Image 1 (spheres, rainbow, N blue to C red):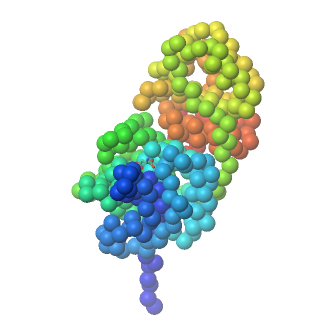
Image 2: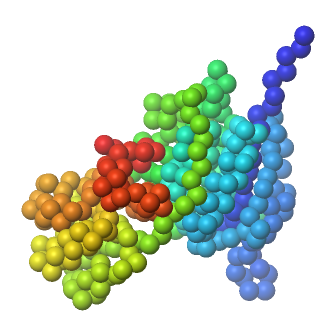
Amino acid sequence: MSHTTPKTSILLIYTGGTIGMMKNPVTGALENFNFDQLLEYVPEIKGFNLDLYSIAFEPPIDSSDISPESWSQLVSIIYSNYEQYDGFVILHGTDTMAFTASALSFMLEGLMKPVILTGSQLPIGALRTDGKENLLTAIEIAAAKNEDGTPIVPEVCIFFHEKLMRGNRATKVSADNFDAFESNNYPLLAHSGIELQFYKNNIMPYRSDAVLTPHYEMDAHIIIFSLFPGMQPDIVKKIMRDKKLRGVIFRTFGSGNAPQEKWLVDALTRATRSGKTIVNITQCSTGSVKMNLYETGLQLLESGIISGHDSTVEAALTKLMFLLGKGLTPEDINRYMNLSIAGEITV
Ligand code: ASP
């Protein structure tokens, strides 16, 4: 009797972004080219002992044009191909990659296979491109298995410039550098140097009983509001009163502080009492919100504002869209915002 283990199979999903762009010889602007052209620039791919398939957004898009509908499209592609593949690599523009990674981490409940997002700062056809290394290593990570055959990284991640980060902890920090992403409040899941080294203690544990449950609804009736000295009451009050507005990602100073002005406290209290969810996250790039540390934070707590803990702006935003999309009550949303549902906050 012969035993043949099936080859590991990976699905590459190409959404667009710089990695697959080429300079228009006339205008000099970067434009998308198609996926087959892209692969011609990476013949090394054939060196993997893997079954590699691909699917592409038609047309490919700059990631500035990514929307909640694009996230649903990705969820649907992954869900309908979940059984056939061992892992997924999503090629995506870097500008909004952290939003997409965060959104997918909530929308793919019970995910137990790798979904690795990557892209590049220079097009794959450029001589000094970072795209090849990012793509090849992302594929290797998506295919990586433990000795018992389970995936090493059963979660949504971003791989970029030697670093594997939890998707909902990563953020784009540089418009110029190859080292463009950071995971400020959570350690790396892997580092690729001469060796690809996984930090297994930081990776979500594999659960054999988990079942993938896809979610498609995101409610985008929310805004990100960043505090600054000199805010004008009329403008802020108008926004907070907006009838269609259901939630605010409120980017405060330091450990979660806001000016003590009465008009602001009143506007926020009125908003939360009318059923809007306001989530407090810090404008600082590292650290967490602690609303009971200063008087200026305490009054926010009393206004009915929820702590976003050490969430990135991308994770807080997409988590709130996700919870609102589920039609939950403000009380339930409050409860879930205080729980880590996909490893997005430290509580
Ligand atoms: N504008 C591009 C995008 O996000 C930038 C990139 O891919 O790096 O689609």
